Image (cartoon, rainbow over all chains, first blue to last red; front, side):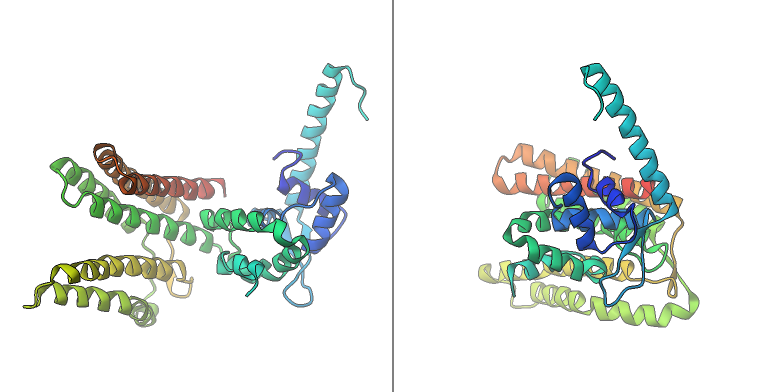
Length: 99
Length: 245
């Protein structure tokens, strides 16, 4: 996965707690400045659910909130640590102080 | 029907059942700007049946197997149709593809549970009734004493090949819809091996059509060559999804 990968963004959005699809996209918009397209968002959620990184909660109607599973939390932490290492080394080589 | 609703119908049923309302709400907010993304999302989903929401554990593998079967049989039919008046080299490639196809289907075939034979048979007959009737009508028309005249030849041929196409789709829908109450699905290793063998069959069919297209430079053979090459890509995708599981 990469920093702008839809699956990583969805996992990041869910790190605070369970959300509906629309709220996930709003959290992604807050993070990156733009919303994912609906096909990309629900494609990412479908993939994450197939890998058991997210799971649905009971909700009203057919729109159900989703939350991170333990496996999803682990994989997100691994990804973010790997990205942080790459960012740190890259910024150091550029002679730029990390933000 | 609005454009958004029409685009949502492009998605597989299992995906719409799970995400349909959320997807519609998101698409309504985004408006026309979401249309290209909805189309690419639908294509992406159809290429990856292994990730659709599943009702039971083996359903993802069954759907991948059904897709590999569908595209391989379609590629073989297209290759057969394209090179019908061909040379022995095509026959060799087509026979090779057919052998691999039969082997792949045997590997992927789920074993019916004994108590499920009657409902399975009745469901299969219901789904296959139309293509069987169409094929029978084509055979009767072709062999009747009123031999097909030139203007009747095209509809008879269309009925014959159409019956294969409808039968193929119906067959794959039967396999994809078989639940654990009706059949014992093949294990993960057998499923992967079956799809790998079908990939070989698709490749042989695609090679035959590619050689034909290279010898007969025209738009239709070129399109058919691209189509059969895509069937190989679809099989490889199905295999990769199952390996990644």
